[in-house]
Image 1 (cartoon, rainbow, N blue to C red):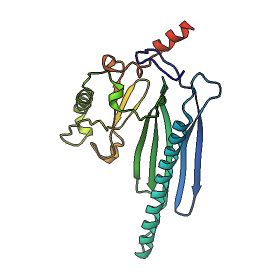
Image 2 (cartoon, rainbow, N blue to C red; image 1 turned 30 degrees about the vertical axis):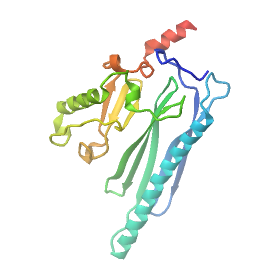
Image 3 (cartoon, one colour; image 1 turned 45 degrees about the vertical axis):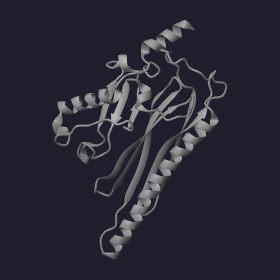
Image 4 (tube, rainbow, N blue to C red; image 1 turned 90 degrees about the vertical axis):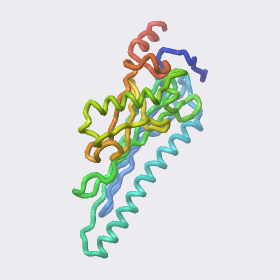
Length: 242
């Protein structure tokens, strides 16, 4: 029941209940509005994720959100303490999070949490993306290697692709930027492909936001593990066989 053929080329949507949660509040110098998902099994579905996997995932999400908020609260308190001691104006900190479920098929779950904070008119203090790529059969975090067929030099392939994209608009990046994609590179999965992304100020100015590059499943289909390449034709074929 909880197995999937590694050569499977169709698409099965994960039957998960995704609960929207929101914690918000305000103090004189600190506002927060934190949205995050909580995942549950659906009763009587064809497949149930090990409850321990979902429990650990939900706890990790909540811990990350709380750590982000508490860290900014401590920063606000320290800044305003120093400001008061030096007769400087205090600042109001605003902290928010949002999330997107980007891929939920074939017992694979990929989603991101966007974390942002600003302080009065001083622009963003933090703009970050937390990424989660989970194999619901095992609870393991997926790596880039898992997304490609055996024998593919995926790191060289991805590095070449990103560098080619940078070369198209070099003025948008730091001068002479060349990337060498590591196994630990941040990414998430969508129906269209793999989104490789970098931290703020890593390869481009902070004002450019989070640099992202879409590695299209369609363009790189010969290299991609078919478990991850879900297209409309696969879904339609599966429906016809019912």
